[in-house]
Amino acid sequence: MKILVSGAGIAGLACALELGIRGHHVTLVECARRLRLKGTPIDIRGDAIEAADRMGLLAKIQKQRVRMSELTQFVDSGGEPVARIPMAEVSDSDDDIELLREDLVRILADALPDTAAIRFDDSIETLTDGGVDGDGGVVDVRFASGRTGRYDLVLGADGQHSAVRRLVFGPEEDYLRHLGVYFALADHPGEAQSEGANSIYNVPSRMAGIFRYKGKAVAVFQFRSELIEYDHHDLDAQKKILIDAFAGYRSWRIPELLDAARADPGFYFTSASQIHLPSWHRGRVVLVGDAGYSPAFLSGRGTSLALTGARFLAEELERCGNDHTAAFARYEARQRPYVTFAQDRVYGGRDRMLPTTWAAIAARDKALQAAGTGAP
Image (cartoon, rainbow, N blue to C red; front, side, top):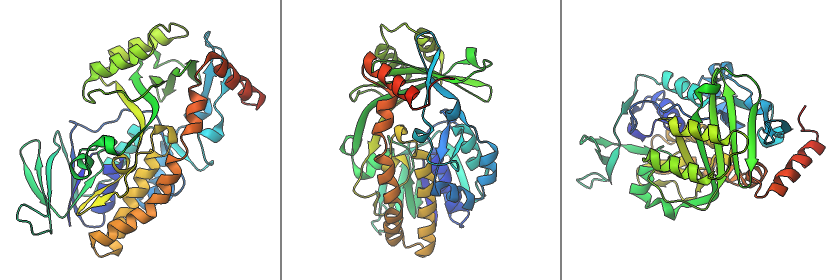
């Protein structure tokens, strides 16, 4: 079949790989001008490890493994360690694989077969399921570039703010469940050559930290907030939201980290939000990954869902002889339990990472110390 995939993130690349190796002709369209590599380390857990193995990528993934979570600690205003993050909150088992997002993106992109091609700096503008002639057997697509195409299937793998979902299922607010937290990430080149553990410092309802890996360093932020309306493409507006959230706090290294955010042209900002849809498919269009069922970064399972989703969808299309109606239903039946599990496991981590008062911060640290996760 001729298949269009929107979004060249982990979900989109995994779909292109899984479908391409099965002989489908896949076009992967991405609005950015290149692969997006920004992000903290991600986790591959449970059955997603088997999915990576069946893709033939597990050995390469294991070679890029990092163990950042084992070296992450809470610090006080003087930078002194007070407690470690409990491993039970960041890992299900010793088999879990932690690696940099950029490494996984590159591994997936390098593995794409000749039957899959990426087209950058373009995006879907309109979809007509059934074709302009209404024959019901194709999807006609018009792109932002002015190009047009006709496809047997369209996959929306374009993230939490999916354009495909908006075009086919309706506005984002109909399906968004905000968890009350925002996350930001910025390069901190001044810390790149420094050594030491990753550090997290809390003020009420906020955290700022420095993570180091593979000769790089990033400033990391989280803060509690109700849903904020902003332009997802306006970098300056996003930076202002972060700076305003930490206004008045000058303890530890917060001013320095905010300066890193101001200076980073690749600054990343997002909400901890979930997507809840009663179904992930309509006609010849289907959603995969965060576009259909974002669990929020607090779950630590978004990457795993992207990999299992891509695998299950490709397998079911193959088993159903390309009967997309049956395949989409079977894909959803297999993937839904994983999504429910991931989306249900977010609140404990939020409360541990973002206590709402100084007293709650102190109580958290004391409890971790008593449990044996105190600083060395």
